[in-house]
Image (cartoon, rainbow, N blue to C red; front, top):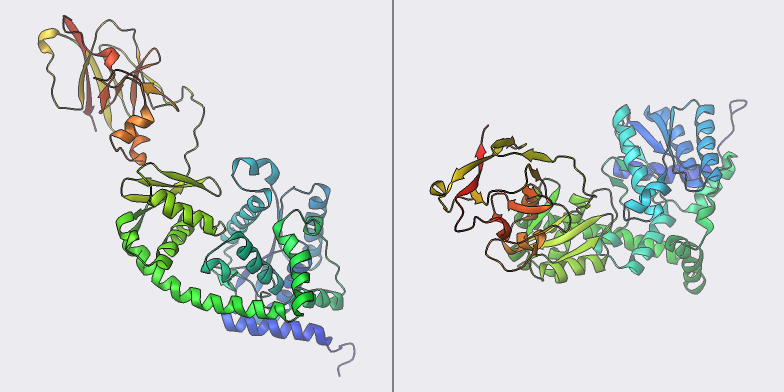
Length: 474
């Protein structure tokens, strides 16, 4: 034995061998990779950093440390950030610490603080990896996390994909410790003589995962023996294989019934209905993952609502989804998209039209107004030309519709919401956003290109009229 060099304790050797076998099996990482390690300062991520630091010597890995201070736990969050910074710098590792007021931003996201913090962390991790050209992002999930996730998803209600747990490799995210138990990680740190920081929120049973960790898992072990966790872990691995096969069928079906339109996914309902129930549900989940790739999977209740209430409902049927998303039916299409956020009406984008006069729109068209004699009034089917009564107050406003706005469609006896009018004429939502209104003193004169307001029609005995025309100029 070389003087001053001692063999590693058995527990360290066992963990490192298990992790090495796992890394070889899934090819994570490979020699020469630049790896961002997400470190919270807790036992799992700290042990992962120590292990990868050892591995870096033989595999020539370029390690970079990332920490998000989500500012949820006040002084404790600042303590964690400082700990990670100092620990990384003491070992000569480059470290990036980002602070973000998650608590302040979460209310507008439609997510819980914890879920929103996870989304922000993944987004900032990805940005940092892009910035430094990292090919891998290592996170510290372990075997206990996998078991807890499985039980949590059973309680919440989820599909095969959810029950198959967290993948060892997901894109460039790698989980080298996903097959290692939390007790092994704690023993590894103890042998290394490293003391992590403790997140006090992990001890509170306010959250479902914590109740599963501190109450359900101990109960199962007490009732059915300590072997219950390895059994669950094997089931998760088995379900992952089944999910991989089914996902292949789902991907084929998705290509046949769905298409990406901008940031939306649009599915042909008649084709969707012809699929096997399992594949149909899988297509909906796949659509969700395309629209919200960083979000958690849909619950069984969400998928059920989408298929029964929306796809099985009338045009206009809709349900809200997590994180400010929505599923809606638009005639024979099922659409999953980001929810429209109605903002307070402002004068931004308002233009003014005199008579005579013209105003150019953003899309290369102009609205032109001129006064004409009664003999020049020629009504036709041309939706780009309208005539309105003279003598109204000028100038007219040209702008987009505002939330809750109403008008009186030509020929009708009463007022109607613009939203209901658009539904009646089967105007797709994506086209509604581009509509323009001509407005006089707060009253809609013309839904341009669609319908005149009854209140502004030309009286039969009028000697003059205002001619309005939409004309392409470029």
